Length: 83
Image (cartoon, rainbow, N blue to C red):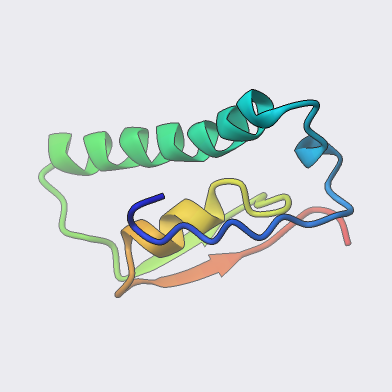
């Protein structure tokens, strides 16, 4: 969250209906876990920061918001399977 993760949630996303704050924290932690995996693979392969990123399927942006914050100079495209 310190990197400026956008906290706006889609009210139509069934995955962000939380019973308490711990469930909400878990939702954002999943996105952070994805970034850890991506960065780990970039480092393992000695790759540069990607210039373009496609998040597919992106759903309501659980991971996309982290990609945008962690790679601010990259072009991030998001595509969902559903409207």
